[in-house]
Image (cartoon, rainbow over all chains, first blue to last red; front, side):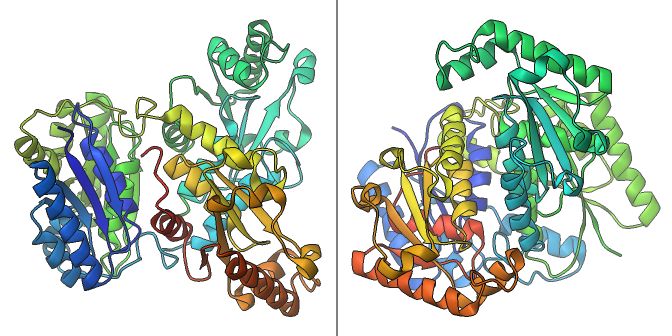
Length: 270
Length: 270
């Protein structure tokens, strides 16, 4: 019997999901997961409670209820359900109030809302990363916070987007392509922004697999070409003393977090 | 005195950050925030402990330490620091072990690592959203999970990207432009995917402000033009019975969560 988990919030429920997944990932079993965001009225809260209780009755297994609910009257209704309640937010708010010597001033939609700090900056960062993806223009390199380098399909674009989306960082990226390989060098716009450069590399065999998925049996996807490109690019990184990491066994989150860790680049929003 | 907060993890520290921000956003004060990811060795843990203790000595204010550390030997070192510890992960793991009747099997890098379920699907979803942004091609509309519609600069692109990045959903988007306005209708590729269509709208005044930022004093950015486009597009949504929401006062997270809530679209990863 796969246990059922409800993620419930009077906001987006994204915090409840992110944290719930972190906790559940510590267990070696599967869960059936249901997210219910925007539980903002008593009526809705009562409906959700019924859904939780029905699940218990139908399956005979007590459902887990992970919630991050700001409004007390909503929280009280959900907590009174038959589910096993895990209150992500308030478990820590009370001890923090004590520690800080100030009362919490709960507001819905503060975590993932537009009121949250530099929201406009972040949209600008996302637009910047899109406009400056894949070396489509070199005009704005001076405005970038960071410029990711690498061969085609090594993970530049998802990493740039994650950096802008999650951290509000203006991340450009520049690809080294086949034609560059004979005489690999940094374009002028990158040279003068040398401190912003960060290299990505990848295992040639993995690159070969990825490229085969895009363009099967082409020169571009051949293992030979992948080997040449990766070797040349890594030599350039070393020659120019550009810090670099391998994306081979890492997720976009891990790559992005490593880039921030190595460069010391500041997060522009949270 | 602004309290200092450390977000610490032996992984990316993204969970610690997301959850920490959710909790801290309930307090009406500023915090100085420092993230330290990849604390994977005893040596690094001891360095971090020294950093926490030094902060206490220098400022006289006890720092807050929010951590989500999987490896016990690392956690023990951090917890022994002079900071006020808030252990996001383990506060819930022990009661969950009891509830589920099984032991946790902690693994580092499971939450935001590549081992986390449908990672490849997600990268494919991100690439799909990029390739099918802004109506640049209609070829792949049949493969989309959802197709966002709207006028230029109403929030289609960031919302599509967030849906793919956060939820692994293949989100395409299609813009209605000035030339369409005289005779607004759905292109054939959208008509045959009618169930996937979701409209975005925006307050014309807000749209005017956003467009002014891109192209000042143009016809495109004029309040008159913004009014016409928004009116026409909303009429189309109503005529074609396409569900739609306004992006005016909402963040990308809120828009995305609302779209999932309204459409019932399934998350493809977490």
